[in-house]
Image 1 (cartoon, one colour):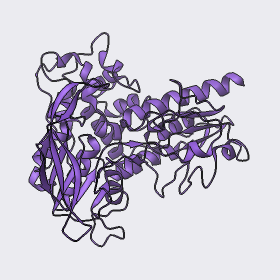
Image 2 (spheres, rainbow, N blue to C red):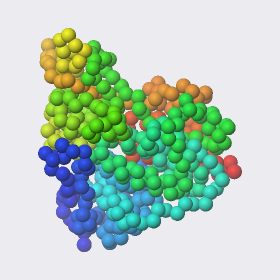
Image 3 (tube, rainbow, N blue to C red):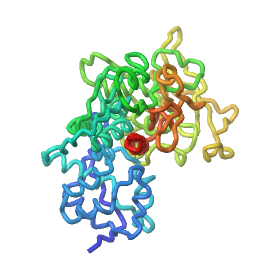
Image 4 (cartoon, rainbow, N blue to C red):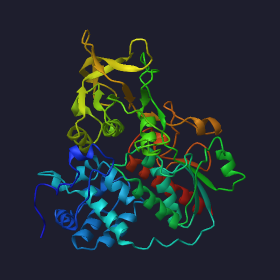
Length: 463
């Protein structure tokens, strides 16, 4: 009997005044009872509109019906046919703008909690102690993957399941890419990332860390002396952007990229950390995306009074609605329709003491379709702060493109690739943020999945 409740089962979570003082996971996950009740809300529609919204094409009604029948391991099996990182996607994928956006139950109420059910199935699998997937027999072909973020891990996992011998080359000392250096522990516990990566290793994927492609090795060396038949570039977008306003070189101004890397990868929030980060009294975070929310919520946990400054209104905030709500609950202030024009220094120092901002109003739509923010003359005001974090987006690192001959790049610095990930250089494929610039985890996974399929078709077709 379907559950016709108009509302999805709420996600249990830590109380705001408790969680804003720790880095433990905020969302606690569904209980078995909640998962069964939520799964019963799925109508198993004939045309499965939710699937068309999933970048990796998971059989959503199929795995939900398995949960509804109590076959949780079967649900995990269906998800893992299309997703290499179920426990991660269930936590950070923007389901509300993808699969859940197309859910029929959302027409007259809230959509089915697809992401929450995906997380439940993945977490239940991990807790069960089920044996890892069996390693396939080798087909004799070797593939190199640059970067161990979501696109690289997905490409590697899909190829490994087909019998390819895959080696991932990661620049940092820990695999996981943005999953470990960008997303905070309270949204995505690093133990979850490690477990997902161990699952790929069980399939035979090798991971070489501290390997900076373009310095340690070149793409041409991978294809030449190293003997790899194809290379997938999933190196992400780790080059931070700034506003280029006066005062950005002051002490206390840093990119969200650096701030989050210090906290998430280096453990700077821990007592006695070897890579400390500033514990500010008042912090301004400039930007309105998910990275801005992550930076603001981390700064709050370090003891700061935090203000998010964004030049558009709340309706245009690009961050997930859930993350904005969590930030507000945790005491973060939003100063909307304003923009910094100068970072101010304390008298006689080079230390930040605040930001001079100007009020904005929304004008005509820009190229993105959003109304363009326009300055209101004479509306300047000052926000006091001893730390300013710029969360304005990132672009692909230029190292690989500058050291690889014949690799075409776009005006924005991304590698040019077709819809299947083929680049302008023979046997070189690319996907994720290295192509598009900063985007979502699931879109990067979708790109890695398409590239893996193209590599397989090209190699097996030629053979």
